[in-house]
Image: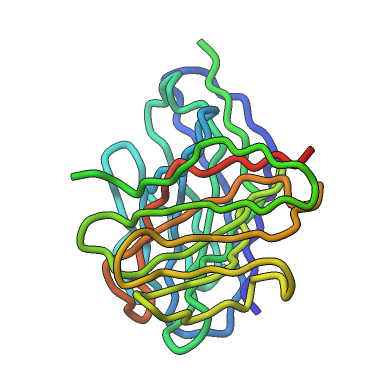
Length: 116
Length: 116
């Protein structure tokens, strides 16, 4: 069974600093996808970034990058130059390989607060 | 290009009533997923549907819950005889295709169900 672990329930970071949100995963599937979503206080879920298990390079999307270390089964999200608007819950998630359940497995999230 | 549309945003029901949650996927998307989020928790997968077919309902409670995605119209998540434990945020997501791993799901804003 797949499992996502986010060990940081909450983080306080100064504005403009870089932030690393931790995510480790467990799966026996050789093919899988890793995702990060942002949930601001308004409640919607916003897709941020995706990394495939066979991708050779770490994914990047603007200020977001994913530090993918396959051997360690970690997929940490890095936010560069943090902004006040980055304050939100952040969820790491994993997709399953084809043929099985296609629902994403989510971690419990990290509550990030950016301080001015 | 409208995103995933869910309605209502908030729904209040008394114990024993029925709740109907609607979801219209993004244009061009034919795959719909439903998730439930309890307070202070990550999202839990419930069901995956394509038009007129339930593909995977492994996360659905066995009783009182049903889902459909008809040929015409939105996907519906139906909860019969609601109980207080059904109070949660229900999210719908859609994706354009089902591949082995790259299955980026885009979420709606959710429906917050409160059972009195």
